[in-house]
Length: 465
Image 1: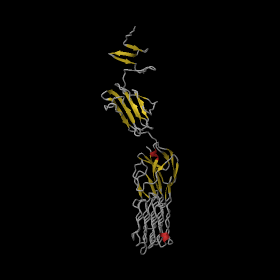
Image 2: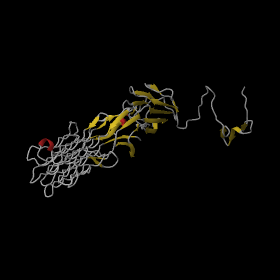
Image 3: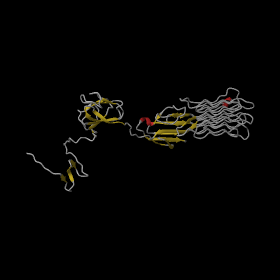
Image 4: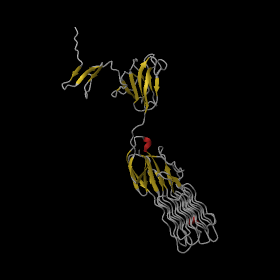
Protein backbone atom coordinates (compact mmCIF):
# COMPACT_ATOMS: atom_id res chain seq x y z
CA UNK A 1 0.00 0.00 0.00
CA UNK A 2 1.37 3.42 -0.93
CA UNK A 3 0.74 6.76 0.72
CA UNK A 4 0.53 10.14 -0.98
CA UNK A 5 1.12 13.58 0.47
CA UNK A 6 -0.21 16.41 -1.65
CA UNK A 7 1.10 19.94 -0.93
CA UNK A 8 2.23 22.94 -2.97
CA UNK A 9 4.65 24.34 -0.40
CA UNK A 10 6.72 23.17 2.54
CA UNK A 11 7.89 25.92 4.87
CA UNK A 12 10.48 26.13 7.63
CA UNK A 13 9.61 27.34 11.13
CA UNK A 14 10.19 30.94 10.06
CA UNK A 15 7.54 30.66 7.36
CA UNK A 16 9.93 30.67 4.37
CA UNK A 17 9.30 28.18 1.55
CA UNK A 18 11.93 25.44 1.47
CA UNK A 19 10.12 23.39 -1.20
CA UNK A 20 7.82 25.26 -3.57
CA UNK A 21 5.99 24.18 -6.73
CA UNK A 22 4.69 26.80 -9.12
CA UNK A 23 3.66 26.22 -12.74
CA UNK A 24 5.57 22.93 -12.85
CA UNK A 25 8.75 24.59 -11.52
CA UNK A 26 9.95 23.16 -8.24
CA UNK A 27 12.25 25.32 -6.09
CA UNK A 28 14.23 23.66 -3.32
CA UNK A 29 15.66 25.80 -0.53
CA UNK A 30 14.91 29.26 0.76
CA UNK A 31 17.06 32.30 0.09
CA UNK A 32 20.45 31.87 1.82
CA UNK A 33 20.07 28.11 2.26
CA UNK A 34 22.65 25.52 1.21
CA UNK A 35 21.23 22.32 -0.27
CA UNK A 36 23.40 19.22 0.31
CA UNK A 37 23.01 15.48 -0.12
CA UNK A 38 23.30 13.30 2.94
CA UNK A 39 26.47 11.30 3.54
CA UNK A 40 26.51 8.33 1.18
CA UNK A 41 23.63 9.64 -0.92
CA UNK A 42 24.00 10.08 -4.67
CA UNK A 43 22.27 12.30 -7.22
CA UNK A 44 20.99 11.49 -10.69
CA UNK A 45 18.88 13.24 -13.26
CA UNK A 46 20.12 16.71 -12.40
CA UNK A 47 22.78 16.84 -15.12
CA UNK A 48 26.03 18.81 -14.71
CA UNK A 49 26.95 22.43 -15.25
CA UNK A 50 30.10 21.78 -17.31
CA UNK A 51 32.46 21.48 -14.36
CA UNK A 52 34.19 18.54 -12.69
CA UNK A 53 35.24 17.64 -9.18
CA UNK A 54 39.04 17.84 -9.19
CA UNK A 55 40.73 14.86 -7.53
CA UNK A 56 43.47 16.79 -5.77
CA UNK A 57 44.13 13.97 -3.32
CA UNK A 58 44.96 11.51 -6.09
CA UNK A 59 47.62 12.78 -8.51
CA UNK A 60 47.85 10.30 -11.40
CA UNK A 61 51.23 8.91 -12.42
CA UNK A 62 50.23 5.77 -14.36
CA UNK A 63 47.48 4.52 -16.71
CA UNK A 64 43.96 4.67 -15.22
CA UNK A 65 40.27 4.78 -16.21
CA UNK A 66 38.50 8.10 -15.64
CA UNK A 67 35.08 8.53 -14.03
CA UNK A 68 32.51 10.98 -15.42
CA UNK A 69 32.32 14.16 -13.36
CA UNK A 70 35.95 14.05 -12.23
CA UNK A 71 39.07 16.03 -13.16
CA UNK A 72 42.60 14.64 -12.83
CA UNK A 73 46.06 16.16 -12.45
CA UNK A 74 48.41 13.95 -14.48
CA UNK A 75 52.11 13.84 -13.56
CA UNK A 76 54.21 12.57 -16.47
CA UNK A 77 57.57 13.51 -14.93
CA UNK A 78 58.75 9.87 -14.91
CA UNK A 79 57.04 8.57 -18.06
CA UNK A 80 54.11 8.88 -20.45
CA UNK A 81 50.87 7.06 -19.67
CA UNK A 82 47.21 6.77 -20.80
CA UNK A 83 43.86 8.02 -19.51
CA UNK A 84 41.02 5.68 -20.54
CA UNK A 85 37.73 7.55 -20.91
CA UNK A 86 34.59 5.93 -19.44
CA UNK A 87 31.76 4.62 -21.63
CA UNK A 88 30.12 7.68 -23.16
CA UNK A 89 26.65 8.92 -22.22
CA UNK A 90 25.19 12.31 -23.11
CA UNK A 91 26.52 14.92 -20.70
CA UNK A 92 29.38 12.82 -19.31
CA UNK A 93 32.37 15.02 -18.55
CA UNK A 94 36.08 14.39 -17.80
CA UNK A 95 38.97 16.85 -17.42
CA UNK A 96 42.74 16.29 -17.40
CA UNK A 97 45.54 18.79 -16.62
CA UNK A 98 49.35 18.74 -16.87
CA UNK A 99 50.43 18.53 -13.22
CA UNK A 100 53.92 20.07 -13.43
CA UNK A 101 54.49 21.22 -17.03
CA UNK A 102 55.91 17.93 -18.34
CA UNK A 103 53.54 16.95 -21.17
CA UNK A 104 56.10 18.33 -23.66
CA UNK A 105 58.66 15.82 -22.34
CA UNK A 106 56.36 12.84 -21.70
CA UNK A 107 52.99 13.13 -23.44
CA UNK A 108 49.63 12.05 -22.03
CA UNK A 109 47.42 9.80 -24.21
CA UNK A 110 43.62 10.03 -23.93
CA UNK A 111 41.93 6.79 -25.11
CA UNK A 112 38.15 6.56 -25.91
CA UNK A 113 36.09 3.60 -24.75
CA UNK A 114 35.83 0.91 -27.45
CA UNK A 115 34.85 2.41 -30.81
CA UNK A 116 33.74 5.77 -29.47
CA UNK A 117 35.15 8.89 -31.08
CA UNK A 118 36.96 11.97 -29.89
CA UNK A 119 36.06 15.25 -31.66
CA UNK A 120 34.35 13.31 -34.47
CA UNK A 121 37.54 11.52 -35.45
CA UNK A 122 38.09 7.90 -36.41
CA UNK A 123 36.29 5.47 -34.14
CA UNK A 124 38.53 4.23 -31.33
CA UNK A 125 41.44 6.58 -32.11
CA UNK A 126 43.18 8.24 -29.12
CA UNK A 127 44.49 11.80 -28.88
CA UNK A 128 47.90 12.84 -27.53
CA UNK A 129 48.43 15.87 -25.30
CA UNK A 130 52.05 16.96 -25.76
CA UNK A 131 52.12 20.68 -24.94
CA UNK A 132 53.70 21.98 -21.73
CA UNK A 133 51.05 23.02 -19.22
CA UNK A 134 48.15 21.69 -21.32
CA UNK A 135 44.74 20.90 -19.87
CA UNK A 136 41.58 19.66 -21.68
CA UNK A 137 37.93 19.10 -20.70
CA UNK A 138 35.97 16.46 -22.66
CA UNK A 139 32.13 16.23 -22.78
CA UNK A 140 30.35 13.30 -24.43
CA UNK A 141 27.69 14.50 -26.93
CA UNK A 142 26.53 11.62 -29.10
CA UNK A 143 27.77 8.78 -31.29
CA UNK A 144 28.43 11.14 -34.23
CA UNK A 145 31.00 13.34 -32.49
CA UNK A 146 31.63 11.30 -29.37
CA UNK A 147 33.75 13.10 -26.76
CA UNK A 148 34.13 16.79 -27.57
CA UNK A 149 37.00 18.93 -26.17
CA UNK A 150 35.21 22.04 -24.93
CA UNK A 151 38.12 23.68 -23.08
CA UNK A 152 41.82 23.55 -23.97
CA UNK A 153 44.47 25.58 -22.15
CA UNK A 154 48.24 25.68 -22.63
CA UNK A 155 49.27 27.80 -19.68
CA UNK A 156 52.70 26.99 -18.26
CA UNK A 157 53.90 30.31 -16.82
CA UNK A 158 55.21 29.77 -13.32
CA UNK A 159 55.30 32.08 -10.35
CA UNK A 160 58.88 32.76 -9.44
CA UNK A 161 61.13 34.62 -7.06
CA UNK A 162 64.18 36.56 -8.20
CA UNK A 163 67.61 37.46 -6.83
CA UNK A 164 67.54 39.75 -3.82
CA UNK A 165 70.80 41.61 -3.20
CA UNK A 166 72.37 44.73 -1.72
CA UNK A 167 75.52 46.74 -2.36
CA UNK A 168 76.67 49.70 -4.40
CA UNK A 169 74.31 52.25 -5.93
CA UNK A 170 71.15 50.47 -7.06
CA UNK A 171 69.13 51.56 -10.11
CA UNK A 172 66.74 49.80 -12.48
CA UNK A 173 66.39 49.42 -16.24
CA UNK A 174 63.02 47.88 -17.06
CA UNK A 175 62.81 44.61 -15.14
CA UNK A 176 66.57 44.50 -14.50
CA UNK A 177 68.29 45.79 -11.36
CA UNK A 178 71.75 47.38 -11.59
CA UNK A 179 74.36 47.64 -8.79
CA UNK A 180 77.12 50.15 -9.57
CA UNK A 181 80.29 50.10 -7.45
CA UNK A 182 82.49 53.20 -7.77
CA UNK A 183 84.62 52.15 -4.80
CA UNK A 184 85.23 49.05 -2.68
CA UNK A 185 82.12 47.31 -1.37
CA UNK A 186 80.24 44.02 -1.12
CA UNK A 187 77.62 42.57 -3.44
CA UNK A 188 75.58 40.61 -0.92
CA UNK A 189 73.05 38.10 -2.31
CA UNK A 190 70.45 37.20 0.33
CA UNK A 191 68.18 35.00 -1.81
CA UNK A 192 68.17 33.39 -5.24
CA UNK A 193 65.72 33.13 -8.12
CA UNK A 194 63.59 30.01 -8.41
CA UNK A 195 64.45 29.83 -12.12
CA UNK A 196 68.17 28.88 -12.37
CA UNK A 197 68.78 30.95 -15.51
CA UNK A 198 67.90 34.12 -13.56
CA UNK A 199 70.77 33.50 -11.13
CA UNK A 200 73.34 34.29 -13.82
CA UNK A 201 74.30 37.97 -13.61
CA UNK A 202 75.57 40.37 -16.24
CA UNK A 203 78.64 42.42 -15.29
CA UNK A 204 81.45 44.69 -16.37
CA UNK A 205 84.73 44.99 -14.48
CA UNK A 206 86.82 48.00 -15.52
CA UNK A 207 90.19 48.62 -13.88
CA UNK A 208 91.82 52.00 -13.22
CA UNK A 209 93.60 53.64 -16.15
CA UNK A 210 97.31 54.48 -16.24
CA UNK A 211 98.62 58.04 -16.05
CA UNK A 212 100.57 59.72 -18.85
CA UNK A 213 104.35 59.95 -18.94
CA UNK A 214 106.33 63.13 -18.28
CA UNK A 215 109.66 64.81 -19.02
CA UNK A 216 110.46 68.46 -19.30
CA UNK A 217 111.76 70.01 -21.47
CA UNK A 218 112.08 67.92 -24.58
CA UNK A 219 110.17 65.29 -26.43
CA UNK A 220 106.44 64.64 -26.06
CA UNK A 221 105.19 62.11 -23.49
CA UNK A 222 103.05 59.01 -24.02
CA UNK A 223 99.39 58.69 -23.04
CA UNK A 224 98.28 56.29 -20.31
CA UNK A 225 96.65 52.98 -21.18
CA UNK A 226 93.01 52.31 -20.37
CA UNK A 227 92.22 49.93 -17.54
CA UNK A 228 91.44 46.33 -18.42
CA UNK A 229 87.78 45.82 -19.39
CA UNK A 230 85.81 42.57 -19.07
CA UNK A 231 82.11 41.98 -19.66
CA UNK A 232 79.61 39.12 -19.56
CA UNK A 233 75.92 39.37 -20.51
CA UNK A 234 73.60 36.79 -18.97
CA UNK A 235 71.43 34.57 -21.14
CA UNK A 236 68.22 36.35 -20.05
CA UNK A 237 69.47 39.94 -20.38
CA UNK A 238 68.43 42.38 -23.11
CA UNK A 239 70.85 45.34 -23.14
CA UNK A 240 73.35 46.09 -25.94
CA UNK A 241 76.76 44.79 -24.89
CA UNK A 242 80.24 45.84 -26.03
CA UNK A 243 82.29 43.90 -28.62
CA UNK A 244 84.33 42.45 -25.73
CA UNK A 245 81.35 40.65 -24.17
CA UNK A 246 82.02 36.98 -23.56
CA UNK A 247 84.01 36.81 -20.34
CA UNK A 248 83.39 33.88 -17.99
CA UNK A 249 79.69 33.74 -16.94
CA UNK A 250 78.99 34.13 -13.23
CA UNK A 251 76.05 32.38 -11.58
CA UNK A 252 75.76 33.76 -8.07
CA UNK A 253 74.95 31.92 -4.85
CA UNK A 254 73.42 33.30 -1.67
CA UNK A 255 76.70 34.74 -0.42
CA UNK A 256 78.74 37.93 -0.04
CA UNK A 257 80.99 38.90 -2.99
CA UNK A 258 83.72 41.45 -2.12
CA UNK A 259 84.18 44.11 -4.79
CA UNK A 260 87.48 45.87 -5.56
CA UNK A 261 87.45 49.01 -7.69
CA UNK A 262 90.88 50.02 -8.94
CA UNK A 263 92.12 53.59 -8.66
CA UNK A 264 93.62 55.46 -11.59
CA UNK A 265 97.38 55.89 -11.85
CA UNK A 266 98.58 59.06 -10.09
CA UNK A 267 99.94 61.90 -12.21
CA UNK A 268 103.71 62.42 -12.41
CA UNK A 269 105.42 65.80 -12.39
CA UNK A 270 107.72 66.55 -15.28
CA UNK A 271 111.46 66.95 -14.72
CA UNK A 272 114.41 67.62 -16.95
CA UNK A 273 115.95 64.19 -16.44
CA UNK A 274 115.44 61.29 -16.35
CA UNK A 275 112.27 60.45 -18.20
CA UNK A 276 109.29 59.56 -16.02
CA UNK A 277 106.93 56.77 -16.98
CA UNK A 278 103.37 57.25 -15.82
CA UNK A 279 101.92 55.18 -12.98
CA UNK A 280 99.87 52.09 -13.65
CA UNK A 281 96.22 51.93 -12.68
CA UNK A 282 95.04 49.40 -10.09
CA UNK A 283 93.08 46.20 -10.63
CA UNK A 284 89.30 45.81 -10.23
CA UNK A 285 87.83 42.50 -9.03
CA UNK A 286 84.42 40.79 -8.90
CA UNK A 287 84.25 37.10 -7.92
CA UNK A 288 86.62 35.18 -10.22
CA UNK A 289 87.08 38.12 -12.60
CA UNK A 290 90.09 40.43 -12.35
CA UNK A 291 90.71 43.30 -14.76
CA UNK A 292 94.28 44.66 -14.79
CA UNK A 293 95.13 48.33 -14.34
CA UNK A 294 96.20 50.28 -17.43
CA UNK A 295 99.90 50.82 -18.13
CA UNK A 296 101.56 54.19 -17.58
CA UNK A 297 102.70 56.22 -20.59
CA UNK A 298 106.38 56.54 -21.47
CA UNK A 299 108.43 59.68 -20.78
CA UNK A 300 109.81 61.51 -23.82
CA UNK A 301 113.58 61.40 -24.23
CA UNK A 302 116.53 59.21 -25.04
CA UNK A 303 116.40 56.51 -22.37
CA UNK A 304 114.72 53.58 -24.12
CA UNK A 305 113.51 51.66 -21.04
CA UNK A 306 111.86 54.76 -19.59
CA UNK A 307 110.52 55.99 -22.92
CA UNK A 308 108.63 52.76 -23.54
CA UNK A 309 104.99 52.57 -22.53
CA UNK A 310 104.20 50.27 -19.62
CA UNK A 311 102.18 47.02 -20.00
CA UNK A 312 98.74 46.52 -18.43
CA UNK A 313 95.08 45.95 -19.21
CA UNK A 314 95.83 48.30 -22.09
CA UNK A 315 99.42 49.47 -22.64
CA UNK A 316 100.70 53.00 -22.27
CA UNK A 317 101.93 54.89 -25.32
CA UNK A 318 105.65 55.48 -25.70
CA UNK A 319 107.31 58.86 -25.44
CA UNK A 320 108.95 60.57 -28.37
CA UNK A 321 112.62 61.10 -29.11
CA UNK A 322 114.11 57.71 -29.83
CA UNK A 323 114.87 56.99 -33.51
CA UNK A 324 114.28 53.25 -33.09
CA UNK A 325 113.76 50.55 -30.50
CA UNK A 326 111.03 52.26 -28.48
CA UNK A 327 107.77 50.36 -27.95
CA UNK A 328 104.28 50.96 -26.70
CA UNK A 329 103.23 48.97 -23.66
CA UNK A 330 101.66 45.55 -24.22
CA UNK A 331 97.93 45.32 -23.64
CA UNK A 332 95.90 42.32 -22.42
CA UNK A 333 98.57 41.65 -19.80
CA UNK A 334 98.06 39.11 -18.33
CA UNK A 335 96.32 37.48 -21.25
CA UNK A 336 92.60 36.66 -21.00
CA UNK A 337 89.92 35.84 -23.56
CA UNK A 338 88.23 37.90 -24.84
CA UNK A 339 91.06 40.41 -24.64
CA UNK A 340 90.80 42.98 -21.86
CA UNK A 341 92.70 45.66 -23.77
CA UNK A 342 95.13 46.73 -26.49
CA UNK A 343 98.74 47.82 -27.01
CA UNK A 344 99.96 51.37 -26.65
CA UNK A 345 101.09 53.43 -29.66
CA UNK A 346 104.68 54.26 -30.57
CA UNK A 347 106.31 57.69 -30.55
CA UNK A 348 109.11 58.85 -32.83
CA UNK A 349 112.11 61.09 -33.27
CA UNK A 350 111.75 64.63 -34.49
CA UNK A 351 113.69 67.77 -35.05
CA UNK A 352 114.16 69.24 -32.61
CA UNK A 353 111.86 66.99 -30.54
CA UNK A 354 109.68 63.95 -31.25
CA UNK A 355 105.96 63.30 -30.84
CA UNK A 356 104.56 60.53 -28.65
CA UNK A 357 102.22 57.52 -28.92
CA UNK A 358 98.69 57.31 -27.56
CA UNK A 359 97.69 54.89 -24.83
CA UNK A 360 95.89 51.69 -25.79
CA UNK A 361 92.13 51.37 -25.34
CA UNK A 362 89.90 48.40 -24.61
CA UNK A 363 88.96 47.83 -28.27
CA UNK A 364 91.69 49.65 -30.21
CA UNK A 365 95.46 50.08 -30.07
CA UNK A 366 96.84 53.48 -29.19
CA UNK A 367 97.74 55.39 -32.32
CA UNK A 368 101.35 55.82 -33.35
CA UNK A 369 102.67 59.36 -33.69
CA UNK A 370 102.22 60.99 -37.07
CA UNK A 371 104.89 63.69 -36.85
CA UNK A 372 104.48 66.36 -35.83
CA UNK A 373 101.27 65.16 -34.11
CA UNK A 374 101.28 62.75 -31.17
CA UNK A 375 99.03 59.70 -31.34
CA UNK A 376 95.49 59.72 -30.02
CA UNK A 377 94.26 57.25 -27.43
CA UNK A 378 92.73 53.97 -28.56
CA UNK A 379 88.95 53.56 -28.39
CA UNK A 380 87.41 52.01 -25.31
CA UNK A 381 84.43 49.68 -24.99
CA UNK A 382 80.88 51.02 -25.16
CA UNK A 383 78.07 49.14 -23.43
CA UNK A 384 74.51 49.82 -22.23
CA UNK A 385 74.74 47.67 -19.10
CA UNK A 386 73.94 50.73 -16.95
CA UNK A 387 70.77 51.47 -18.92
CA UNK A 388 72.43 53.98 -21.27
CA UNK A 389 75.32 53.76 -23.71
CA UNK A 390 78.62 54.60 -21.98
CA UNK A 391 82.26 54.14 -23.02
CA UNK A 392 84.92 52.73 -20.68
CA UNK A 393 88.69 52.13 -20.67
CA UNK A 394 89.81 54.38 -23.52
CA UNK A 395 93.46 55.39 -23.94
CA UNK A 396 95.01 58.77 -23.18
CA UNK A 397 96.47 60.92 -25.95
CA UNK A 398 100.17 61.67 -26.30
CA UNK A 399 101.24 65.12 -25.17
CA UNK A 400 102.32 68.17 -27.09
CA UNK A 401 105.89 69.45 -27.01
CA UNK A 402 107.72 72.72 -27.07
CA UNK A 403 106.17 75.32 -29.38
CA UNK A 404 106.90 74.45 -32.99
CA UNK A 405 107.43 70.75 -32.23
CA UNK A 406 104.88 68.03 -31.38
CA UNK A 407 101.15 68.77 -31.29
CA UNK A 408 99.04 66.90 -28.66
CA UNK A 409 97.16 63.74 -29.57
CA UNK A 410 93.41 63.46 -29.17
CA UNK A 411 91.61 61.55 -26.45
CA UNK A 412 90.07 58.18 -27.19
CA UNK A 413 86.94 58.63 -29.34
CA UNK A 414 84.59 57.16 -26.72
CA UNK A 415 85.48 59.93 -24.27
CA UNK A 416 86.71 57.79 -21.37
CA UNK A 417 90.43 58.56 -21.87
CA UNK A 418 91.92 62.06 -21.61
CA UNK A 419 93.49 64.10 -24.39
CA UNK A 420 97.14 64.99 -24.32
CA UNK A 421 97.94 68.56 -23.41
CA UNK A 422 99.59 71.48 -25.14
CA UNK A 423 100.47 72.86 -21.69
CA UNK A 424 101.14 73.21 -18.95
CA UNK A 425 99.75 69.85 -17.72
CA UNK A 426 98.22 66.69 -19.14
CA UNK A 427 94.48 66.16 -18.85
CA UNK A 428 93.06 63.78 -16.28
CA UNK A 429 90.78 60.93 -17.31
CA UNK A 430 87.22 60.79 -16.02
CA UNK A 431 86.80 58.86 -12.78
CA UNK A 432 84.90 55.56 -12.82
CA UNK A 433 85.36 55.15 -16.55
CA UNK A 434 88.79 53.47 -16.44
CA UNK A 435 90.44 55.71 -19.04
CA UNK A 436 94.12 56.60 -19.43
CA UNK A 437 95.48 60.04 -18.56
CA UNK A 438 96.99 62.36 -21.16
CA UNK A 439 100.74 62.66 -21.59
CA UNK A 440 102.40 65.49 -19.64
CA UNK A 441 103.32 68.68 -21.51
CA UNK A 442 107.00 68.95 -22.28
CA UNK A 443 107.13 72.59 -23.20
CA UNK A 444 109.42 74.04 -20.54
CA UNK A 445 108.32 76.60 -17.98
CA UNK A 446 106.10 76.24 -16.02
CA UNK A 447 106.89 72.63 -15.23
CA UNK A 448 103.81 70.51 -15.96
CA UNK A 449 102.43 67.17 -14.86
CA UNK A 450 100.92 64.28 -16.71
CA UNK A 451 97.22 63.50 -16.64
CA UNK A 452 96.02 61.05 -13.97
CA UNK A 453 94.27 57.86 -14.97
CA UNK A 454 90.56 57.49 -14.26
CA UNK A 455 89.39 55.14 -11.54
CA UNK A 456 87.56 51.95 -12.52
CA UNK A 457 84.05 50.65 -11.91
CA UNK A 458 82.20 47.37 -11.35
CA UNK A 459 78.60 47.06 -12.53
CA UNK A 460 76.41 44.02 -11.83
CA UNK A 461 72.98 43.53 -13.39
CA UNK A 462 70.27 40.87 -13.03
CA UNK A 463 66.57 40.26 -13.64
CA UNK A 464 64.36 41.17 -10.70
CA UNK A 465 60.81 41.09 -12.09
